[in-house]
Length: 414
Image (tube, rainbow, N blue to C red; front, top):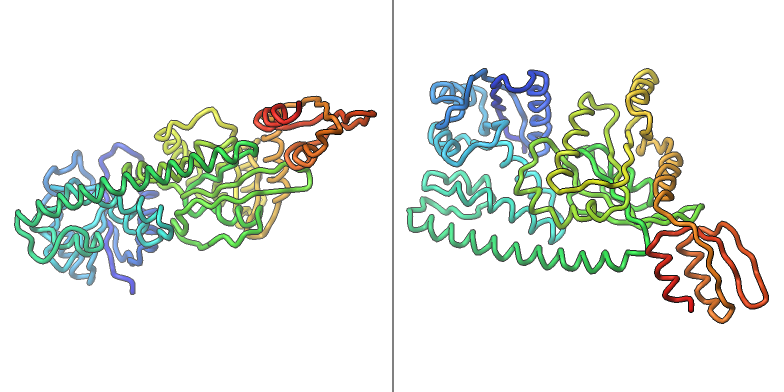
């Protein structure tokens, strides 16, 4: 059941009003994903943030009065509030209205959509780091906001300290668990050295899972909703030209993605770090394409990801007219334009991926004695045969393959 909510934004004059409106529109979508219906938006122009209540106590009382008049039980701030600000604002709001900031909202959405043990551990870690500095005796609302972790009916100072100690213990335990998972991922990746790795990266709801389904034929979970999937899915893609590769669909990005959340998901995002090719997926129907691309770059920068082969893919072209598509093609001449939903131009995407990956390949001539003919099967599965010539005692092949495959062949052929 949806709860009515009010969104509060502050215009400090440091960004364009258009950008602030885009953030608010995005926050409305986030609220909808969290099953909150936004019935009013309030933007205040200020020269600086009030250190106590973010917007000032008088304005905050006005916001709460408006929320009560509109039967709203939730007030959502577009910015991240400090622990002190959240405490003071909640004190003004009382027990009937819950105050939540952008970070808390995103954490709630991630918690709702986490399915696997790894994703749940990642969310729990980020959530506990967010909660730890926000434990005070007045904050019984955190029991609702954070799923009952930490606070229990009317805790005193002693209970708060116990809760903090328990949270720190849980954080230590989750860090160990995620390090173990990351170690398992590293071992798993070593077994994939003979095949190229491609990752889909992009803004949430750009259609990455739909592209994964198109290319792999898998039953990927698809929903028109922010952060509908959080877990990395990897599938082996094979096609007529024998360019095999592993395709990974990673968690979607969003503006102002909480730092602790990015840090917690680092083991998952390692798929991007280990990729040979990154496909940046963009929603061609969005009016915020530049911002979405910028957000992707910001996350990559925070992960120290650089010097990778890249391919920009505009999805959802079925929602555009030809004029808009032509305009985007002029702005992004090297991009690929597809509709995963309508399965339009998918072959062009596959060809573009093959072309990018082929730049990493090496052309080599190898001699295979008939006594080691069993290695041929491996070659046909992992290489592109450019030329073949048979002799009395051997076969000479001209092949195109990755360096790791050539190294393995070199160790097998004596």
